[in-house]
Length: 182
Image 1 (cartoon, rainbow, N blue to C red):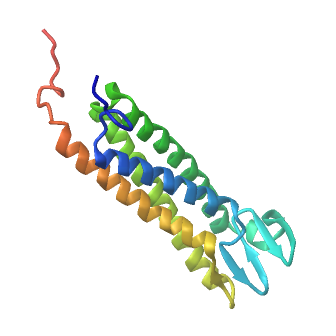
Image 2: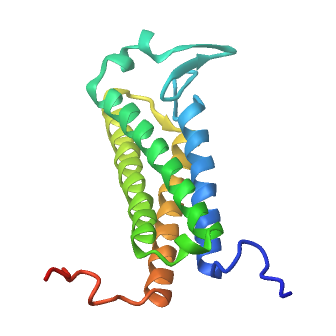
C-alpha cells in the first residue's frame, strides 16, 4: 500500500491555492465584522458598528448609515463574504475529492469565485477610501480596511494559481464542446 499523502492526489499548486483561499476567507471575516475600517474624531468605525471609547453603537444610528455609497460598501462586502465562502467549499472539494479534481468546470468555478469577490471587495475598499476622504475632514483608514484589501490580493493570487494548475494538468478536449447529435 502506498501513502498518497495529505489531500489525496492534489498538486502542490492546488493545495497552496486552497489554503490561500481559506486564508483570504478568514481575512474577509475579520474585515467584515470588526469596527476598524476607519478612525476619525476619536472613534473607530466598521461596516456595522461605530465605537467611541469602550461603547459601540450600530452604524444605522450614524449619518454614515444613511449614505447610499456606504450601503453599497456593506452590500458588496456581504456579497464578497458569501462568494468567498462558496470558493472555499469548492476549492476543498477539488483538493479532497479525486473525482472532482479533474473536472475543468469545477476548477473554472473556483477561479471565477476567486476573482468575483476580489473585484467586489477591491471596489468596496476603494469606494470607502475615496468617499471617506470626501465626506470627512479627518479620516484615517484602519486595520479592517487593510486586511480586507489584503484578502483581495490573496484571492487574486489563489485564482491565478488555480488557473495555472488547471492549464498544466487538465488538457482541453476539443470534442467536449461538440454536439453528438445524429
